[in-house]
Length: 165
Length: 165
Image (cartoon, rainbow over all chains, first blue to last red; front, side):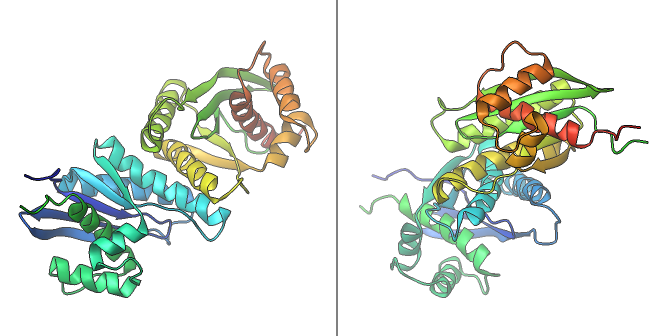
């Protein structure tokens, strides 16, 4: 008896300076890291060129690693209206790449992601990063954007874990 | 002696419920309305499907009317962070379609647009709509989203108007 068993998951941490991504798969009980990294945008002179790079970069990753679903953190708040608008642009470009490729989209709250990864909803970024390294058998995870993207993917894969028994 | 003479302009009023668009051209001193309308999104069950429809709908319009540039209103504020995030997603999907098609992008403040269209920076929506009808020789303009999209295009075309010789 099992619940839904999801396949290969692309986690995304969208941002207008850096967009992190990670592709993770679950085989039996074992999580397997397939790829991760970040799309760096700060050098591009306009938000619009950044949107193009986020969208195009994720399209490439989707073509190469063929995930079946996408996991992303829900956003509830932001420093201010301006940063919410900017983040919205980046998030729109990122999620569009996923929807256009026919991937199913799942959103999780920061609390759900931290709990799924560390067992503790108030874990800080370094605890999340350290658990991600352990769970995926990685020597290093390059930066919080990559770690957050992988954490969203891991949360999704554990959330839908078949019930024991 | 003239300043820059822009070509066919696509005005966009991005929104997650309705995205208005209008294509306007300037021939000599005369503004010519080529097309306008709205992409209606409210019936779609998720923001992500709406992003896909905004992006795909504008891609079609760009392919059909071949504008060379895009004009859009700058956003400074929003009711709250949540609505700013949602608007950001819609705006990101809309502007991505323009950037991917290689169009040049121009942003104008609400004040600039109202001034360019009505001569008065504090004009209300119905004054803008009525002037748009007059300037473009239209019997009707269907709704404020279409009117705002056309107003952005008209502002752009008048902004770059060659100086009188």
